[in-house]
Image (cartoon, rainbow, N blue to C red; front, top):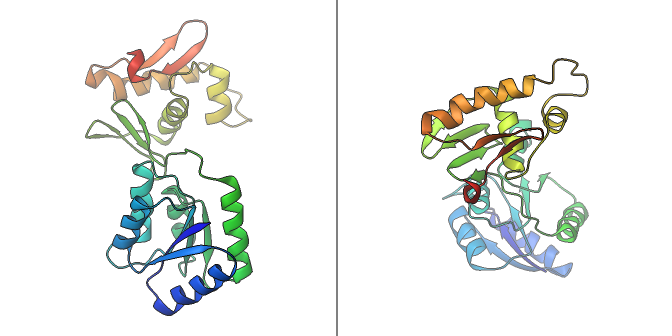
Length: 226
């Protein structure tokens, strides 16, 4: 299995390469984020081991860039940054796993083997449906170049529709995924939020992408269905 190790601490990078090579991996090393991004674009790696604090281009931006380019190579973040916010940001930008330094080499190898068993499923960190772009990690949405302001609930409804774009979703489907099991209010709340969304996402742009399918539910139309 071929790995890309993006690590700017030379001694650690050399030690990791020796250890991983001893475990049967072929390892290429990049000492900064710019070289790491170039290598990840140019070569079909089975996995990437990525530090966050890198010269040139940090690990967060490198990860986000690869996912935006539809590069789904599994990424394991290996870093001294152990804050909760750092872990959340790394995973939200598209990383698959997160391991903090110091670490046991056996754990690193086990995590890599687990990633390799799962492979690289297509799971974009940023969702795009026509001219709509959603970034669930930062909870931001754009129509073309224009940033839209949505409430947390509005965003959640739109995200669920975007992740299932083209499919008709019933009120029950939307309630089950956006509201919690304890919700005992009027199911009509779904239609209320669809109206809110249309006023912000569709109508100002002359669009009708958020569609009510009579007797069935709602869907976010794909560009080819427009």
